[in-house]
Length: 155
Image (cartoon, rainbow, N blue to C red; front, side, top):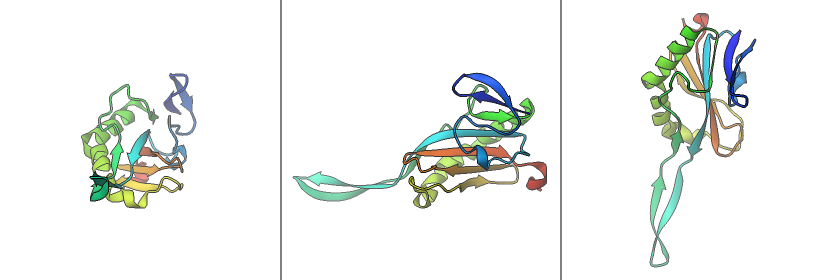
């Protein structure tokens, strides 16, 4: 049984399958021991023009940016887990640089992520954790899910 925080009722609830406060439940394998998800705001790369005396002037490129929490606390919403120990392990792994790497690498990945499509993108993966994102055709959000890889998958 998974424990998760219901975003609407703000209560802890139990479920047979992983549930996240924001989307991408379907990305999470049912054999994981802990998962986390967040709805992040993303800004795609934009090109704007500096105005100079009413004429279009210098081109300014504003890089893509992902607004995501990179430090999770014990009471952070978005976790679902089988055991408290698995939740703590995932939280430590995410806090120890994985989420910061996802945020930093987003600029490189952003050219393939479009707000009007539904397609999962692997944002990070190693032997212990996988992180995916999908805009779910929302036009401004990137739904992010991370989970501990099941033992048989991490080998």
